[in-house]
Image (cartoon, rainbow, N blue to C red; front, side):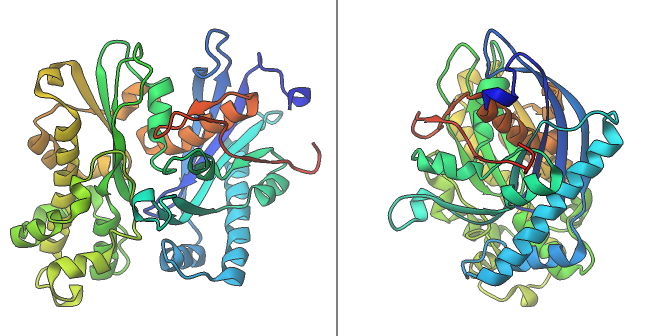
Length: 395
C-alpha cells in the first residue's frame, strides 16, 4: 500500500465498535501523526466522538441473535449487510459534522458486532473461535474509504484468544513511565490488564474477569420494558444484595481460573443466572434485589481479579483506570473502590475518552496495520498485523 500512503504524513482514522451491551455504535475520529522514533506510538488528536443509537429493528434482531450458537445463514447475511451500511452511514455523518469539507477519513478500522465468541478454554480443539458481523467490503464501498476489519481472527490465528484486545493498546500506547497501571474495562463483559511500566516490554496478566453490564442490562430489559440499563446504578442502590445468590454465583470456577482467560454472554447470561437462582427469573421475588446482586457480582469478580494481579507492596506504585459503560454505574464504582481498597482513576486522563476506548483501539490497530506495523499477541508473543483490508472501487 506504499503507493497510496506516505508514512510521514498524518492520517485521520475512524474507529468504531458496537460492544457486547449492544446499546449503540461508538464512533471516534482520530488524527494520527507519525512518530519517527517508534511507529507504534503515534501522536494523536481526538477530533470527534459520538454514539449512534442502533435502528430499532436492527437492535431487536441483534439482541435476539447475538451470542447464540444457531446459524441463520440467509438472515444473518441480510442483516450483516444492513449493519455494514449503517456503519458506513454513521461514519459519513460524523465526518460531515466534524471535519472540513475537503477532509475525510483516510482509513476505517471497524470491529463490527460480535455474534459469537468462544475462548480456548471452552473450545473442543483448544482454539478460540469468534464471529463479528460488519462486512469490510460493504463498508468500504458505501463509504469510499479503505476499511480494515475482522481484527480478532488475526490474534486467534496467532494462537491467542482474540479477546480482550485492549491490553495491546494499553501496553504499547498507555503504559506509564514509572507506575504499574491496572486497566479495567466494564462493558458487557469486564476485563483487566496489569500493565507494567513502559520500560518493561512484557505483557502483564490480562483477561476477562466475568460479567460486566450484561446480566444487569438483561435483567433491566426483562423487568422494566422500555429501559435498557440501570442508569447510574439507581436500581441497584434501591435493592439489597441476596448473599445466598451471590455465593452461588461466585462458586462458578471461571472466577478462579488464572489469567489469561476470555468469556462472553454465551456463558454469562440469564440461563446461567437462573441456574444459580434455583428458580425462574420471573419467580424471583424482587427485581431490585436481583439487579443489586448481579451488580455486586460485577464489582466482586473485578476485586478478586485485582487481588490476583496486585501485590500489597506494589499498591502504592500502582493506579487503576476504569473505562466502559460500567464507569457510569455509581453502585459498581463505589463497591469496586470499597472491595479493592484502591484509588480509582478515570481513564479519560490518558487523553482518550473512556466511552470510546475500544473504538480508538480499532482505529489504532487499523493505522498500524495500514503502515505495516505489527504488535505482539498477548498470549503467545507472535507478531500480528491485525485485520483484513477492503478497498473501495476507486483504489
